[in-house]
Length: 242
Image (cartoon, rainbow, N blue to C red; front, side, top):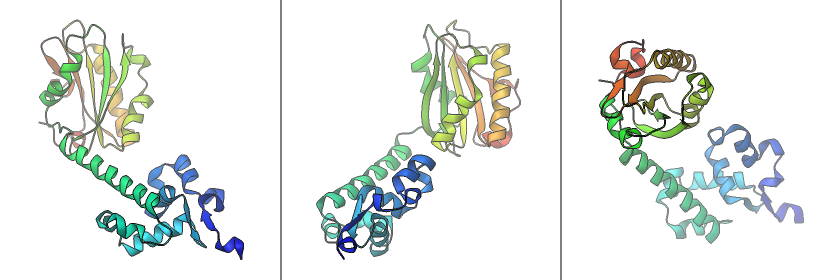
Protein backbone atom coordinates (compact mmCIF):
# COMPACT_ATOMS: atom_id res chain seq x y z
CA UNK A 1 0.00 0.00 0.00
CA UNK A 2 2.80 2.39 0.93
CA UNK A 3 4.57 1.59 -2.34
CA UNK A 4 1.46 2.39 -4.40
CA UNK A 5 0.85 5.67 -2.58
CA UNK A 6 4.31 7.18 -2.91
CA UNK A 7 5.13 9.49 -5.79
CA UNK A 8 6.47 7.73 -8.84
CA UNK A 9 9.54 9.32 -10.38
CA UNK A 10 11.34 8.80 -13.65
CA UNK A 11 13.74 6.39 -11.96
CA UNK A 12 10.80 4.08 -11.26
CA UNK A 13 10.48 3.44 -14.99
CA UNK A 14 12.49 0.73 -16.78
CA UNK A 15 15.79 2.25 -17.91
CA UNK A 16 14.93 1.99 -21.61
CA UNK A 17 11.71 3.94 -21.00
CA UNK A 18 13.19 6.81 -18.99
CA UNK A 19 12.78 10.07 -20.91
CA UNK A 20 16.13 11.56 -19.89
CA UNK A 21 18.07 8.48 -20.93
CA UNK A 22 16.16 8.25 -24.21
CA UNK A 23 16.79 11.92 -24.91
CA UNK A 24 20.50 11.49 -24.31
CA UNK A 25 20.67 8.45 -26.59
CA UNK A 26 18.26 9.38 -29.37
CA UNK A 27 17.78 13.15 -29.16
CA UNK A 28 14.87 15.27 -27.99
CA UNK A 29 12.89 14.78 -31.23
CA UNK A 30 12.47 11.08 -30.37
CA UNK A 31 10.35 11.95 -27.30
CA UNK A 32 6.66 12.76 -27.38
CA UNK A 33 5.25 15.79 -25.57
CA UNK A 34 4.27 13.93 -22.40
CA UNK A 35 7.80 12.52 -22.08
CA UNK A 36 9.33 15.97 -22.52
CA UNK A 37 6.98 17.31 -19.84
CA UNK A 38 8.01 14.41 -17.59
CA UNK A 39 11.62 15.62 -17.69
CA UNK A 40 10.44 18.97 -16.33
CA UNK A 41 8.09 17.43 -13.77
CA UNK A 42 10.68 14.88 -12.54
CA UNK A 43 8.17 13.06 -10.29
CA UNK A 44 4.51 12.23 -10.62
CA UNK A 45 1.83 11.79 -7.98
CA UNK A 46 0.72 8.81 -5.95
CA UNK A 47 0.30 5.90 -8.33
CA UNK A 48 1.20 7.93 -11.45
CA UNK A 49 4.55 8.44 -13.11
CA UNK A 50 5.77 11.80 -14.35
CA UNK A 51 5.02 10.65 -17.91
CA UNK A 52 1.43 9.84 -16.97
CA UNK A 53 1.08 13.20 -15.22
CA UNK A 54 2.44 14.91 -18.32
CA UNK A 55 -0.10 13.07 -20.46
CA UNK A 56 -2.94 14.12 -18.13
CA UNK A 57 -1.84 17.76 -18.35
CA UNK A 58 -1.90 17.62 -22.15
CA UNK A 59 -5.36 16.04 -22.09
CA UNK A 60 -6.77 18.46 -19.54
CA UNK A 61 -5.48 21.60 -21.28
CA UNK A 62 -5.85 20.22 -24.82
CA UNK A 63 -2.21 20.22 -25.79
CA UNK A 64 0.79 22.50 -25.52
CA UNK A 65 -1.11 25.55 -26.74
CA UNK A 66 -3.57 25.03 -23.93
CA UNK A 67 -0.76 24.81 -21.40
CA UNK A 68 0.63 28.05 -22.80
CA UNK A 69 -2.77 29.73 -22.51
CA UNK A 70 -3.46 28.42 -19.00
CA UNK A 71 -2.74 30.75 -16.12
CA UNK A 72 -0.08 29.99 -13.55
CA UNK A 73 -2.76 29.49 -10.88
CA UNK A 74 -4.66 27.03 -13.08
CA UNK A 75 -1.55 24.87 -13.42
CA UNK A 76 -0.91 25.01 -9.68
CA UNK A 77 -4.42 23.71 -9.01
CA UNK A 78 -3.73 20.43 -10.84
CA UNK A 79 -3.10 17.59 -8.40
CA UNK A 80 0.61 16.85 -8.17
CA UNK A 81 1.77 20.19 -9.59
CA UNK A 82 2.54 23.01 -7.18
CA UNK A 83 4.56 26.20 -7.62
CA UNK A 84 7.85 24.67 -8.73
CA UNK A 85 6.43 22.39 -11.43
CA UNK A 86 4.05 25.03 -12.75
CA UNK A 87 6.93 27.51 -12.96
CA UNK A 88 9.14 25.02 -14.80
CA UNK A 89 6.47 24.31 -17.41
CA UNK A 90 5.64 27.98 -17.91
CA UNK A 91 9.33 28.86 -18.23
CA UNK A 92 9.99 26.07 -20.76
CA UNK A 93 7.03 27.06 -22.94
CA UNK A 94 8.05 30.72 -22.82
CA UNK A 95 11.60 29.86 -23.87
CA UNK A 96 10.23 27.90 -26.83
CA UNK A 97 8.04 30.85 -27.78
CA UNK A 98 10.95 33.29 -27.58
CA UNK A 99 13.12 31.00 -29.70
CA UNK A 100 10.39 30.95 -32.35
CA UNK A 101 10.20 34.74 -32.23
CA UNK A 102 13.96 35.01 -32.67
CA UNK A 103 13.91 32.72 -35.68
CA UNK A 104 11.06 34.62 -37.32
CA UNK A 105 12.15 38.18 -36.59
CA UNK A 106 15.89 38.45 -36.14
CA UNK A 107 17.19 35.75 -38.49
CA UNK A 108 17.97 36.97 -42.00
CA UNK A 109 16.74 35.36 -45.21
CA UNK A 110 19.15 35.07 -48.11
CA UNK A 111 17.74 35.25 -51.64
CA UNK A 112 20.88 36.33 -53.51
CA UNK A 113 24.68 36.22 -52.99
CA UNK A 114 24.78 39.94 -52.18
CA UNK A 115 22.70 39.31 -49.05
CA UNK A 116 25.29 36.84 -47.80
CA UNK A 117 28.14 39.24 -48.55
CA UNK A 118 26.39 42.04 -46.69
CA UNK A 119 25.75 39.77 -43.71
CA UNK A 120 29.25 38.26 -43.52
CA UNK A 121 31.59 40.94 -44.87
CA UNK A 122 31.78 42.78 -41.55
CA UNK A 123 33.23 39.58 -40.06
CA UNK A 124 35.58 38.62 -42.87
CA UNK A 125 36.59 41.59 -45.02
CA UNK A 126 40.07 42.77 -44.13
CA UNK A 127 40.93 39.73 -42.01
CA UNK A 128 44.57 38.67 -42.27
CA UNK A 129 43.79 34.99 -41.80
CA UNK A 130 41.36 32.74 -43.63
CA UNK A 131 38.13 31.73 -41.94
CA UNK A 132 35.62 29.14 -43.10
CA UNK A 133 31.98 29.54 -42.06
CA UNK A 134 28.85 27.48 -42.64
CA UNK A 135 25.38 29.05 -42.79
CA UNK A 136 22.60 26.53 -42.11
CA UNK A 137 19.26 27.48 -43.66
CA UNK A 138 15.58 26.57 -43.76
CA UNK A 139 13.82 25.52 -46.97
CA UNK A 140 13.17 29.23 -47.60
CA UNK A 141 16.79 30.19 -47.03
CA UNK A 142 16.23 31.68 -43.58
CA UNK A 143 19.26 31.43 -41.30
CA UNK A 144 19.08 28.83 -38.56
CA UNK A 145 22.71 28.69 -37.49
CA UNK A 146 26.00 30.39 -38.33
CA UNK A 147 29.14 28.49 -37.36
CA UNK A 148 32.86 28.95 -37.90
CA UNK A 149 34.73 25.76 -38.78
CA UNK A 150 38.30 26.88 -39.41
CA UNK A 151 40.52 29.85 -38.76
CA UNK A 152 44.00 30.20 -40.20
CA UNK A 153 45.37 28.81 -43.42
CA UNK A 154 42.56 26.62 -44.74
CA UNK A 155 43.78 23.40 -46.24
CA UNK A 156 40.77 22.19 -48.19
CA UNK A 157 41.84 18.59 -47.77
CA UNK A 158 41.55 19.00 -43.99
CA UNK A 159 38.03 20.44 -44.19
CA UNK A 160 36.21 17.14 -43.80
CA UNK A 161 32.81 16.86 -45.43
CA UNK A 162 31.47 15.09 -42.34
CA UNK A 163 32.34 18.11 -40.16
CA UNK A 164 30.56 20.46 -42.55
CA UNK A 165 27.47 18.29 -42.97
CA UNK A 166 27.19 17.72 -39.22
CA UNK A 167 26.19 21.37 -38.82
CA UNK A 168 22.98 21.29 -40.93
CA UNK A 169 22.13 17.82 -39.59
CA UNK A 170 22.27 19.04 -35.98
CA UNK A 171 20.39 22.22 -36.90
CA UNK A 172 17.82 20.24 -38.92
CA UNK A 173 18.54 22.55 -41.81
CA UNK A 174 17.49 22.04 -45.42
CA UNK A 175 20.45 23.78 -47.04
CA UNK A 176 23.81 25.41 -46.42
CA UNK A 177 25.94 28.21 -47.81
CA UNK A 178 29.69 27.98 -47.39
CA UNK A 179 31.56 31.26 -46.84
CA UNK A 180 35.25 31.98 -46.60
CA UNK A 181 37.57 34.93 -47.15
CA UNK A 182 40.73 35.53 -49.16
CA UNK A 183 43.11 37.65 -47.07
CA UNK A 184 44.96 38.54 -50.29
CA UNK A 185 41.93 40.67 -51.16
CA UNK A 186 41.22 38.89 -54.46
CA UNK A 187 37.86 37.11 -54.26
CA UNK A 188 38.42 35.01 -57.39
CA UNK A 189 38.03 31.31 -56.49
CA UNK A 190 41.07 29.10 -56.84
CA UNK A 191 41.04 25.75 -58.61
CA UNK A 192 41.05 24.14 -55.17
CA UNK A 193 38.01 26.24 -54.14
CA UNK A 194 36.12 24.94 -57.18
CA UNK A 195 37.13 21.32 -56.62
CA UNK A 196 36.17 21.49 -52.97
CA UNK A 197 32.79 23.03 -53.82
CA UNK A 198 32.05 20.26 -56.32
CA UNK A 199 32.77 17.66 -53.65
CA UNK A 200 30.56 19.51 -51.18
CA UNK A 201 27.65 19.62 -53.64
CA UNK A 202 27.96 15.85 -54.19
CA UNK A 203 28.06 15.22 -50.44
CA UNK A 204 24.95 17.36 -50.00
CA UNK A 205 23.11 15.39 -52.65
CA UNK A 206 23.89 12.13 -50.88
CA UNK A 207 22.59 13.51 -47.58
CA UNK A 208 19.63 15.43 -49.05
CA UNK A 209 21.07 18.76 -47.92
CA UNK A 210 21.09 21.49 -50.53
CA UNK A 211 24.37 23.32 -51.09
CA UNK A 212 23.15 26.72 -52.20
CA UNK A 213 26.43 28.51 -52.86
CA UNK A 214 30.03 29.04 -51.87
CA UNK A 215 30.75 32.73 -51.29
CA UNK A 216 34.30 34.07 -51.25
CA UNK A 217 34.80 37.48 -49.68
CA UNK A 218 37.74 39.64 -50.71
CA UNK A 219 38.92 43.05 -49.61
CA UNK A 220 36.46 45.12 -51.63
CA UNK A 221 34.34 42.59 -53.49
CA UNK A 222 33.08 39.01 -53.35
CA UNK A 223 32.51 36.03 -55.64
CA UNK A 224 29.62 33.59 -55.85
CA UNK A 225 30.83 30.27 -57.21
CA UNK A 226 27.26 29.45 -58.14
CA UNK A 227 26.89 32.68 -60.14
CA UNK A 228 30.22 32.14 -61.90
CA UNK A 229 28.81 28.91 -63.33
CA UNK A 230 32.03 26.97 -62.86
CA UNK A 231 30.42 24.37 -60.62
CA UNK A 232 27.17 22.51 -61.33
CA UNK A 233 24.67 23.24 -58.55
CA UNK A 234 21.31 21.46 -58.58
CA UNK A 235 18.36 23.82 -59.20
CA UNK A 236 16.36 22.15 -56.43
CA UNK A 237 18.82 23.39 -53.81
CA UNK A 238 18.48 27.00 -54.89
CA UNK A 239 14.93 27.68 -56.04
CA UNK A 240 14.89 30.92 -54.03
CA UNK A 241 18.32 32.02 -55.24
CA UNK A 242 18.32 34.95 -57.69
